[in-house]
Length: 429
Image (cartoon, rainbow, N blue to C red):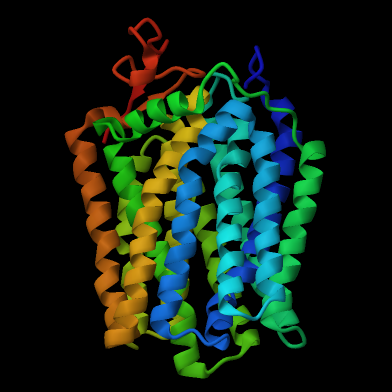
């Protein structure tokens, strides 16, 4: 699935440019949807508990697809998986935007989450698997940071589009337009990205078993805890900000767009700030950022700080934590199973997201938004602290892969131990 010779840095530039454009386009469409989806559910007759249950159900369907999606990419090729994911994702958004019944809306959300699961991780994998051993840590960190940064810029553009177009276009057609953009990106992907041959000699079950065994080992335990905490904090913000906005200011799509634009600009700044974080210490800065994400949301929910201030602060921390955590993951994944391991960690993190969205809906119904936010914000604090403790307990969790497709001999995929890394970096914690 990789070429016989590592690509030079200059050869990566055209691919990196296309990666940034696709990251921008996908995030733009996703945030057009993200700006209004709770409002759409409420306008179609959903009660608060139904909102949480519908979002949890859609996320569960995505989780079921997320688990094997990486193995499908590692076997059949990541470009094929990218195209399939974008087609499903876009079709789901078009369905959401063109129907009015809640069951069909749920069907569109499920189709969209399936597509998102198929697509997730493929863009970075296509490029990172072409990185050789020369200056590997810095180059992988740069790819993850640029992808994250341009994804955040696309998010800001999506929010701005809602703010402007919301004056004359209803929420449903806005989501359908985002789906159309994803379908166009799917059609262009075979031209924009090189072929990524798979490994038909490896069975999907074997790939998944190898990857899951690694992810569930003590070496990856701190990263799993961090991923769960980051996902829980992100989902809490996603499902809570629109109800808080509606409670304070009423339903106004332009205001949704304005708030989301401010939040995504902050998200972009947070991703850009990762440039000044030491790439050899993501295991320190990632957990610290995740632990404090929920604090400004709680303060905003209780009117201690203005709503917009709390949301902006939380988004900045999410942007920083997302990039730093992504660098840590990618530095630990072997090329042969990179996509599968990304999916495995994402699937475990999604469990935290599903529990958060489901719990928020019911707690909101029982005790109101402020109490729901306060209780659920503790999840990210506990998960971040757990990640820090596990990092100290398991030093191998900071031993990064520094050569192409090589991993520790204690890992299941290293066979008898003859495939030891040519050099392994152990960084101070």
